[in-house]
Image (cartoon, rainbow, N blue to C red; front, side):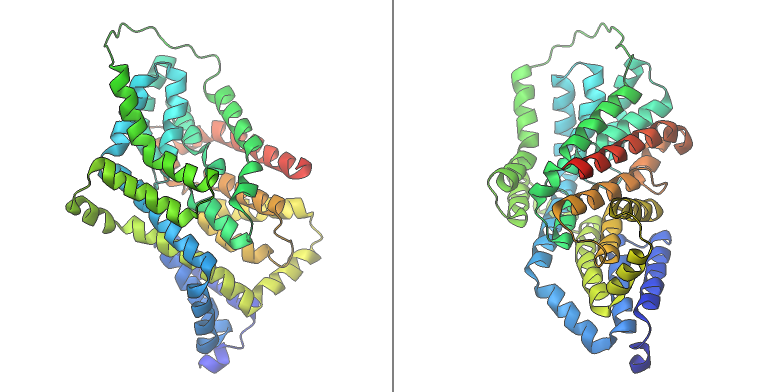
Length: 406
């Protein structure tokens, strides 16, 4: 049976595997398991057991894969530890006490929380955004938009996020080359977020005369931000391997909070930690199996025959995939092998694929931050879309302009 299956058409096998992947996602199976199962299925049906084992071994011993897996593990561990140790509460408290302008709070606070890429993490910033947005007279729909948009605005240039690390690993480009091409897009995202969500609003005057110990508050802010700062500096400024930098960031949290063995044990039992780690491995395995099976070459030829402009191809494929599956990592993992034989992943191509995957995910109806925020503010997702869709469209246009001129 295995002998027969190993000669199935690679493109047919790819389609079957992606259908299984989508079914698993929509059945609420985790991204890591879905990617890994789809990769194994594709390998067994198109390569057979022996060659699938060979690809698996190559993936497990590949230095890029190991860096990606360990970096992903420590990134998500850092995110969960921030929550489990209460350090995220110190961060929001100190930031809220240090900044008094409501417009700055509703934009900076979600962005600060966005540095900890926890699924549905926009819910963390929602309470304070709600309070400050009331002072600005924002509707529930605008509250949702502001919280969602500014929560995600910093990620395209944030070096310690699984999305950009995954893109760099799969396309064999440097993180720095990806970040530099997102700077203009991020500036546009900030501007459009302000224009749509905060323009023409004025904070109401309050009689709050509560004194804040600025020195103590600043110390708390620095301490709560320190693990993130040290990680970014080590990697982005000093060139330390991302896996090592994130490990040091995790160690910093443990030292600052004097994390007990019980809390650490609870964190390590968190399903999200292992799900994200497995997703990193599954993405690399899926890419390698797709290439080894020949499906990537067939897909590339088919796309080339459409004569579609390369820029449009690299914009549309990842954005549509991200929208359909509600996952940036999943969209990147699927788009790279689909486009591998059609385009050369030079930095400008990899950068466009990355940002369009991210922006497609922003407006996905299964985007957890969007769903949770709408629930919190008692606002329908559709009402948020009237702000979110034009903001996303402008940002996508900025990404295309960056591609053209950089």
